[in-house]
Image (cartoon, rainbow, N blue to C red; front, side, top):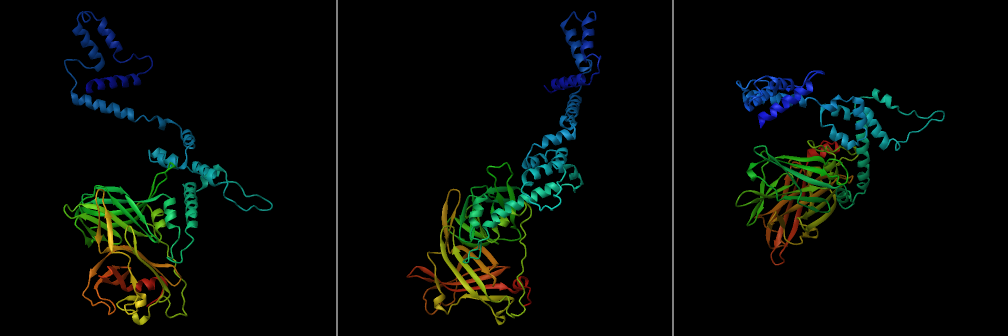
Length: 511
């Protein structure tokens, strides 16, 4: 079969390359074969003449199979080089591409170098820009003369890609202005935009998780479930083919905006790239089926205790700049938050040490365990120890500040087929505002309780527990008492520690 196809393509190529007046290959030879005396007498001689005229070789010396294979590849290569689109003038191709929209031009620019060059033509992008934004741009007119209109011929004088970049900036600017208007209203209770959840849902924002094993094989998973709260969101992934926990090399979290009714590719914004080999997890709890590992900053990995395979992965994301981080980053680079330094107050020697506000929430994936709002937190210079500022939110000695927790401290989990609950684990979501009511430190992370040997307060009789969160950005420490008769936890102490360098960097001070 392969030799027959090779002979057919060889004859077809010879027919295409023949000159006018020249007989087709094999026809004259076949005619001579038929007319020669003696050869038309037997069928064997007739078949021999026909085959020799087509192949150009004598049957006594058959062509090797390797030579036929080379000729076949040579014919395919010569025919593939004949690109009929490249024969068309560039003016005609640009005219054809001018009927496409912006998203189609992006797609076709990846076909070849020729289409990449034609799809980035400045005149084409000038027409696209003027058709969508030309009428919306208002310019003041002089009394004696009107503003000159841009001639498409003069577009050649602009820098290469000018109108394409202008179109993208204008498009992104319009989209950003729409959802930024919705984020202007700030909640006085949390210090965060009220409509964060609405904007995320309205823009069809989801989150994807990419897991890479030690062999470099990546597996991208779409979210299985999302839990929204007042100032954070929990995203869970389950049902995928996770590698064993000790085989995971790194995980990447991307925010994805989908365009369901528009022909546009989904935009992926990198939020976090976590190297598991460098940041090993910490065990925070377990039950009969799974054990929970905490990965900084907010990942929770559920591992089957028998097989050591990953059952699910959860991440807790704070609402602070979550829309920007999910939309304005690139697929390989996260969003960089702009730095807005507060005005320097030289008249106040305690500038940067007072007027803080804390919004504090303990919750899990289903319920809110405790919520508190604390104002006018301060720290004097003499309280700065070991490079940390100490904010005493709830004092152990002040009984009026103690808070009861509703329900037990548990963290429900759910895989593809099973579900359960791990005791003494939950999620802490903290928002610390500076004296200008701007977010100063925001964190949402899993925490666990540990039994301590410290004696409880004199007004309580029960077991004491310690719950704390620690990172390079700060530290939170809570002391709880379990009242067995009431079957309830009481929060008797809450202290927030902030590094001095973070305050100096934020307020441009030198404490």
